[in-house]
Image 1 (tube, rainbow, N blue to C red):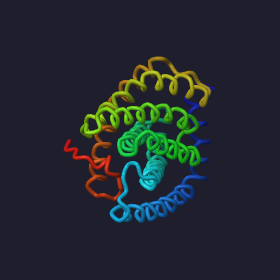
Image 2 (cartoon, rainbow, N blue to C red; image 1 turned 60 degrees about the vertical axis):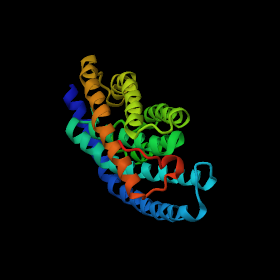
Image 3 (spheres, rainbow, N blue to C red; image 1 turned 90 degrees about the horizontal axis):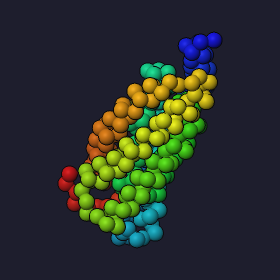
Image 4 (cartoon, rainbow, N blue to C red; image 1 turned 30 degrees about the horizontal axis):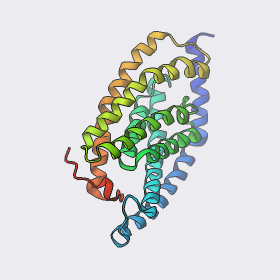
Length: 251
């Protein structure tokens, strides 16, 4: 059996799983999203009465709920983005899912810090695993956790050393760290995990071709979209971000 036949068989099995699980699970998480949004809105409205601040227990709890909310949003989007990736690339590359994941990691780390980045990315990865939105869904909780830890650590560094740094500076620094991590982790996913899942070895040239694409997606669309999302959230005040996060960033 040649590579194309194995890939076609794999895709056929994969699409059957999508048909069985996708819609029901997506609707389930959308209902959870509505409940979380309602709960978070109640907390946000309490901000002016209870004088929440970055050291307040309620504020920290709100941070975690907000990060969870972003994770659910990212997970729902991923169920569609990664299915589109399978259609476009057969699952060998995940450009749309990549942009979605690393946009929300940057947003969560910048707004909610170390634990916010971890909560958001792991909730998204778990939703993707439950819905089986991509052949590589099983590895994303592990791989994305590495990115979240590094980006979250950078967020801590900014909060301690340069708390008044501009949004753009923080996002570019975090995104640059993610781009450096892409070099070994794209290799790990493409050359080790993917061949294990499909039973066919991947040529090293595929990695050399894919790596520049992921670096461009990380430094370009993911960073730009994260900037737009952060600015939109700050302007809309949908999420209470605490005094420490309500700085006067202008760029």
